[in-house]
Amino acid sequence: MPTDIAFLAIAEAHQIYHWLPAALELARRSSVRVSVLAPSDTMLDLIGSYDPEGRLEPVRLTRPPLQPDSLFRQPSRFATLLLNHRRIARCPVIVTTEISSARLRHMPGFSSRMIHIKHGAGDREGGYKKGHAAFDLTIVGGEKDRRRLIARGLGTQDNVRVGGYPKFELKANRQRFFSDDKPVLLYNPHFDAKLSSWINHGPSVMAALESLTDWNVIIAPHVKLAQRVPPIVSAAPHIRVDMGSRHSIDMSYTMSADLYLGDVSSQVYEFLIAPRPCVFLNLDHHDGAGAAFSHWRLGQAIDSMDALAPALARANGLQAGFRDVQEAAMRDSIDQSPIPASQRQADIILDFLKGAA
Image 1 (cartoon, helix red, strand yellow):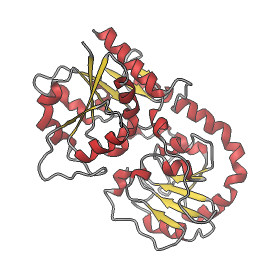
Image 2 (cartoon, one colour):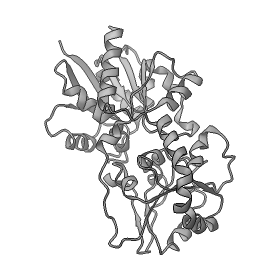
Image 3 (cartoon, rainbow, N blue to C red):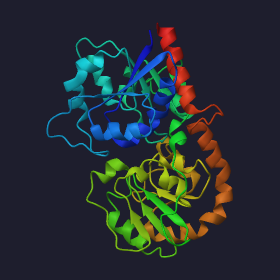
Image 4 (cartoon, rainbow, N blue to C red):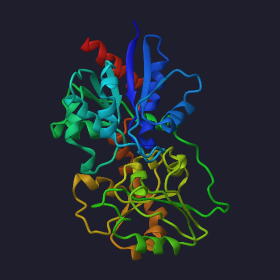
């Protein structure tokens, strides 16, 4: 009998890239049958675009009525779980990248084994939630997340494993998004209202970016921020705004930019797959000494938009001094073994299931 493993896709599209490579790798193995459960035809179509051989079995869950359905606006996760918990409970093994599914533990008749693949590799405290402790196995990108989950009592030495960062296997190639050869700056604000540089400072940030006529600028906010704020618009010819597209989630921009400008988004670690200059905005004057801001050591941190142009002018000259610390932070955050992360994650899942049998 094949091992049945279900991947639960009830989050927005950016999370797909963190579990899809492992799902495809498992589906290539003759002893495994892999299904994908989603309430969205749009999401199943995106997943299918990476599965031309049809190895994954798509399962369309019941979608809550009158709920949004696009890559970046999905039905309520809790409502989806309530409507479909009996169907989901029939799956002996469930893999997911989001924490809402921890609520399944409290639903009648639910006894499936639950595996969490932690998406992203960021530092903010919001990346560590109570729900992490509900999973039988958690797979993280690097030792940093393993260490922090265990220290917070959200996992143990036995059930938190390092599996690398499979999103790198689906990353887009470097692309030209502008017609000239000016350097490209990527501005990637986060959605956390307490930490985001855009929510409280959008007008001053935009004014500074529009003044950077020696740069091309891509503004690509975290997809959750893009759904929570009015559309960001600019008529400046050197600015490209993306409020949510495939480019904004498949590493097209992090691969194509020359400099990263952000606040607390974990995408800085995707950008640093190749060490390059970074500038961080601390416009609310946070104490940057805490672990939640440890990535601010990887580049210049500035506390006013007046300081942006001078920071950009210094960036290339200072980069040699940041390269070693960037590489060390990447090794801690994302374990880049020569063995592909998808294969490592698949092996970890099957080893766990064999031990739990």
